[in-house]
Image 1 (cartoon, rainbow, N blue to C red):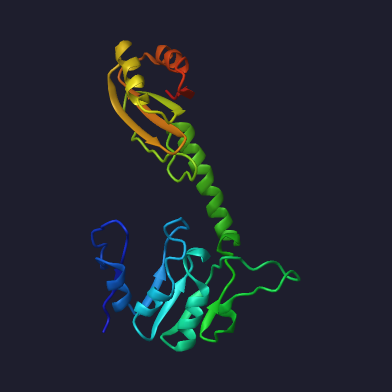
Image 2 (image 1 turned 45 degrees about the vertical axis):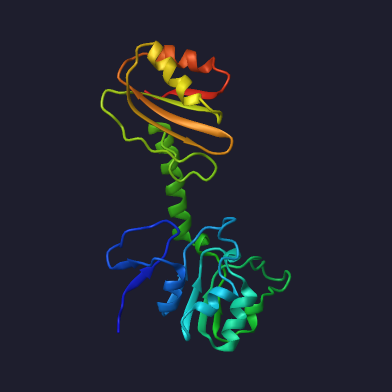
Length: 238
């Protein structure tokens, strides 16, 4: 019987096409014939798949990890494979990645499992991937220069404010301190500018705000914001 695709996320999601959202990870593990991980490496995901999760998987199921090596416990997967509870596995990522030819021997508990396929994580090293990465980086720089958008940034707030006709856009990077947005808006009010669009994002250290105005007061706003003690960099985009 073909049952399609079922997925789990830590945040509630609607069904995606024929992909059905599972209410819990345990529900997914008990039903799925094939489990595939698609998660980043974070403090929350480190070691998220260990003996407990493999035991809850459907007997005879298959397991795939092409996400990050640290999100599973390799020794626990090896044990589940040797016991026959998991019929087979394919792993493309490892806590310590294989080195080059002639260097230290690659060592992992999974090497001794005949029902496990191990492959080097070199997808990003193909000619096609390198070209795609180059285009992605170039487009990211282009978006930031032309619109202030930072979607995809890994060490800066991710923002993307749609462009508005006849608006004047200002970008401000500032220290992440309480009350900054209120002070920015006070400056805008004092110079008589009406905000037609605004988007703020922060991380632990910095904040980033994109502001669209309906009045050409950019020079005055630029001067006032640059004088603020919280300011790191302010730029008039157009």
